[in-house]
Image (tube, rainbow, N blue to C red; front, side, top):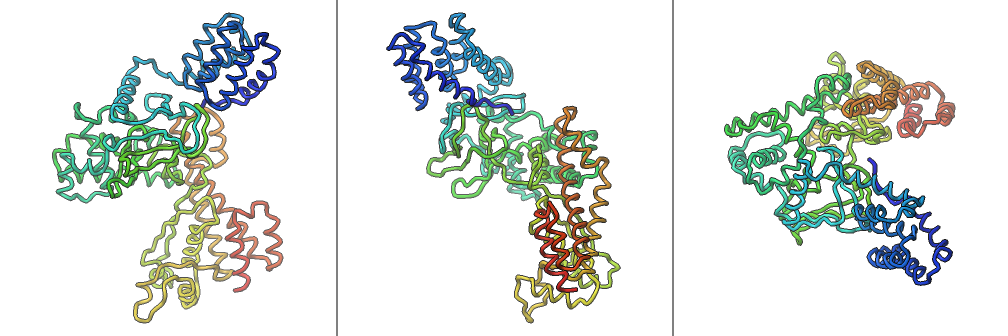
Length: 570
């Protein structure tokens, strides 16, 4: 995203101006006024600085440096239009000055970014009505501005330079749509009374509320409702078959299918309990459902935890957080504040929580490149023909299949669980050894008064033996090889695709999504291959071999466990 920041070039220019002041001014009053303006500017007292620089221009109308500083000050005060006008109304000699011309170009570029649409454009008419509704309702938002990139893509920027803990947005309670309000709508009240079995009751109720308000021309929230995006085509559940084909081989497709089915299930359940809701289509319900889930805030309001849709606060895009939000009971309002010093014009981001791309993509419609929270789901199945099937089933909570989400960061608890289940599945030998590990590693105290398996949950199982661990590592190679074989492209081919500009936004997100999954599978293959090499060697040579590996930190936790366990056991 392009942002407008005070560039280092401007700081250099300001320093140069100070040095040149005495040489440039023959009038001592002008020189003093100019110095005063610059000092005020450095202290961010822009009104006083502007007053001094106007005095300079009153005495010397050809001073290009004074025009530069005036336009600079006006920009810092977020008066871009006046900054441009001040230069364009200056004498031609001033406009031809290198610094002034460069600043004018920057100002015009920023003005164009801030004015994507003309004021009579339908989007701007809706936006201006929305801003008036906020102001009339008592909202405070004088230090931020919204920039349009398209009808449904907007960003929030700092209108002026922000200090830490500055108030950016204050939305009174009466402008917020909460779950409690949703429950009191005509259809919401009937849903509450009939108690349908909904998979996502909170989001479904909020969706029902928004749908009713959308179809009510007199809705008190109409200006807010009108600002909700018209398109949800970036969410995978609305992808075309062609777009979904870019996810071929990805386990993420199961999540997409499940989400579609879950939303349809809730819709049909509501229609069955409240037939009048059928006036809204499943397509409408799905569209609003995704708007709600991607924009709702989990707040503590009126002494209870609830879900809230907060006007304008829902426009902050995801990124390294520069803002923080909270609902304050004493003020009966939702607050957004800066968490750090931010330059004027900078886009302001909030955090949505650190998540795997599968969650970002499914629930928000975007992905992150090189996301260090990525995971890939891997199914581990117990062989029904295993002689120890009955024993292992009890240790697996009587579930023959386990789904482990293996993260890109392999030194985690999830990887421990992954290997623990594989060791159990691949184990051949005395079942008492399994019991031994279960008792030694279980956090639950064993009591003869209770059946062991009823109180037991699968504990961590360290390497059991060289034979078992070898089987486990070979199984990892088989599993990852099979999963990688389902994709029509390789990791390297995906990387090449991402270098170009031929992909649509949805196609690009799909490629990033599947490439992230492949990276984890390839890391597991590298880990398993390294483990198989280490496990064959005597302890000392194994350590020396591992120390020579340049990527050893990626697999450190597993390999250390392997070095200290397997060679002791066998």
